[in-house]
Image 1 (cartoon, rainbow, N blue to C red):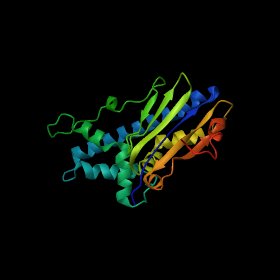
Image 2 (cartoon, one colour):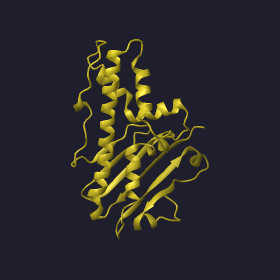
Image 3 (cartoon, rainbow, N blue to C red):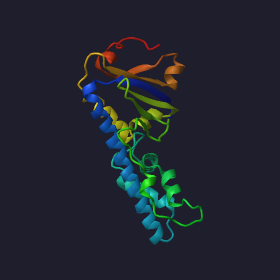
Image 4 (tube, one colour):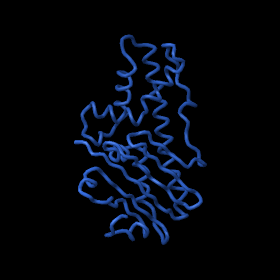
Amino acid sequence: MSNYNREQGSYTIPSAEWADLKRVVREAYNDLQEKRYEVAVAIWNRLKEETGAGFEEIFEEETMERTERRSPFGGRPTERFVLGDRHFDREMIEGEIYRKDNGRVYKPRKKAFPKKMNRDTRFDLKTLGRPHIRFDNDSRTVYWRVHENNRAVEDARSHPVAEAFFGALGDIDWTRQSGGKVKYQDEYREDAFQGPSIKDRHGPFGERSRGQAVR
């Protein structure tokens, strides 16, 4: 059953925890980039050597082999492929291998899978809903947003970088003047004339909204 949903929120992070949270997100993103590059090289090698197999078939095999978790939508093989497609960025890998548009395959370039540095503050996750994590160094506030799409929130939350992010939030030693929350909304709540629900509360700022309606 479809469910068009979205969510957004922010957290003010204690100064002692700021660098560690950024590091966790950055390392999770860079690890995924490394896996994407490995998949791209594996596909390129097979396309060179195998006859009769196309890009999509090989991509499916390579990503399913590396996708250890099941999809949040079930777990059937076709759904695991959907998970791999979004996390491994099929379109980007295909464009890199066939980058000269002449039908020939080219070895993926490492620079086509750039990693984030400490100075980088935005992490786009490239799933349904175009989720992103953004760090504001001046206010030590981190923002999470998922735009509306069919099951966009479930898709975004299953992303390895999102899992690392929310896991790290749970490990923070929250102090005064810190914390936050996420506001969630979907089509069924709207049909019932209900406002957004609040979830993932952390710290004093998050607890202040407990039991209150979101305006």
